Image 1 (cartoon, helix red, strand yellow):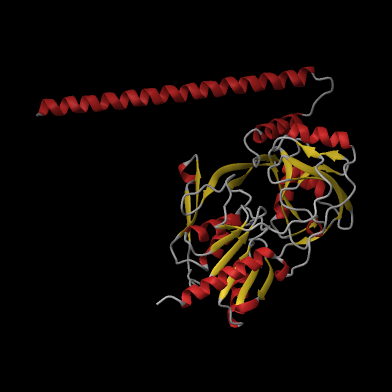
Image 2: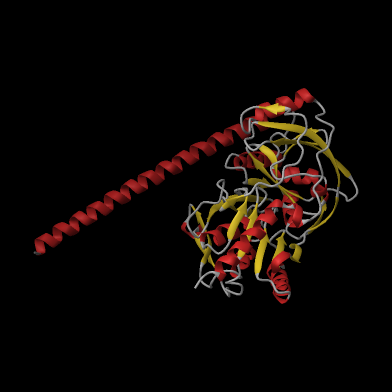
Length: 434
């Protein structure tokens, strides 16, 4: 028996030792490869400093290298110089001079994620998915999101000319047009509209998830309840997201306490987290419909995915944007920073939000606007080369501006009308239950 124990122990030590040896060898190989790549970078930097026709600034070279490194990872990671980092901080405060659009880089093109309601961009008719191919006379090819923000923001009252490519659903065809927009102070409101519609159905248009949203939402819900609300439409169309904890708190109002609202998964164990509802169930039983569209992103997709997975609300509209990557802003010693994707969001049912979006239970397309005489652009989806070739051929692009976004009138909004019908049906169904 003692001999058997010794043999087993010896085998265990041997296996552990071999595993550790293999692991150490792999780690050593990784380190050696990293050192070789750093030596390559150092050699290249030295050659540029020694041989370039003009004497380069070391900071510009390092910043350029960091910019290239981050942009090679994905569409959302980027290097922020000190000025760009300050611009990012301004964007989270809720008031700034600009156009009123959330932008991102998608398929290598500067893309409108959503126009913020009642801002200059929204009034000018910009839509989610529009490609900004020129800012004033400058082509936006290879621009980063932070660089674009600098160009779009400016002194209130000044004008900026945008050349827009608006594609069809497949991205295979589209039209160029130019729109001139006057900058203004952008004051972001969390809740745009609170109304009692027909049949005592409450309606809340939630524009963004910011610090005051939970309190504002409670006030709006209490107001509707006092007015006799017996059904709720929560409109998240063109809501680009905002603060993660606020999106979670929004779901709190409609599901029981202790339920997972969203989880994050990354490469490191510390990045795997679950966010659960707390102090929930205030409006647990009220029939509910959520409206989303391609401009619903990030926090909106967290809310939509959670309420859909728990079958707490019927989701209608069109597929959401698919922005479910978590960016961490990691400061550097000189005031610059790395905006780095560190994890991705998953719904309570385990669905990946990033690039996939949330598909409604019932797809209801929005009313179509007139689209002109025909396409200026015809190629494969997100064919970047063809986009800029066509833009160059057209020189100035089309002069005719697109129809402006309209003011709120729920009876002319087919998605809201459909949501009302669904809630009416749910209420009738409940009365038929024994």
